[in-house]
Amino acid sequence: MVSDTSFSSVEGPYTAVVFAYHDVGVRCLSVMLAHGVRIPLVVTHRDDPEENIWFESVEKLARDNDLEVATPDDPNAPRFLQRLADISPDFIFSFYYRFMLSPAVLATAMRGAFNMHGSLLPKFRGRAPVNWAVLRGETSTGATLHEMVEKPDAGRIVDQFPVPILPDDRAIDVFRKVTVAAELLLDRALPGVLDGMAPLITQDLAQGGYCRGRKSDDGRIDWAKGAKQIHDLVRAVAPPYPGAFTMLGSQKLRLNATRLMPATAPAAPATLRFDGTHLVARCADGRSLRILECDLDGVALQAATFEEFFGREPVPLGENP
Image (tube, rainbow, N blue to C red; front, side):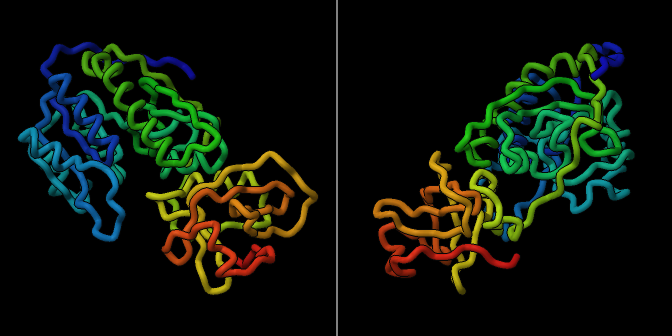
């Protein structure tokens, strides 16, 4: 990456409109407040009653600090755009806000617009970066503060903060690490952004790609794949995400935690059995997964009761998607 010219220095105080949601939004808004940035407006989302809300509330934090809050259905609509233009903030910051902001919205910030992304850009641009990093078997990821441009997650990089992904880390474990990384990164980088001295580094977009959002059915297990790939899928979508699942007849078995076992055997069709202590899935590549947590049609399934449902013989695994 190549360093570009930074902003010209301008003395504070500084104003910023903050678009934020989720835990990263809460922690980064807290950093903005700690640094004394004046925030005339916080823009966030109404919680979706159909979504599992397991994260903290940006709206609550904002109201606890007497900040004005908006929850527009469309932040790019002309009426809301005029509201931002009337504020004419020095900066716009986006911290896990879910809507794309148009060039017209970004242009209302007099000195720049910046986003916190949950990967080490240019890798895993786009949606669900933590889940995709775990799914792809990455051993590290992190947080990136970058300039916002028309193309998502493509602007110049201010700074990055890496975190490790351990072999049995679930996406929620990694997300918590990324949340801390985002907080530390913003605390470190914010003074330079505000005073115009932060170096901006151009991304080499050829070194990464865009990831789409994920749907519940993306958790369906393909038992033709190897044990490591299935283990990574389980980790990537484990609760509080929808989970990895397979059908056993008419019943839905969801795998919530697995462990990749070192022993190998000849390749054979995948099966599931109780070995006397644990549930074990023997995968098509000959490696096995120990099932640490699972549920059957939404009810926790203990390994010792597996044979009551399915008998003593190994149960074949595999289905048409």
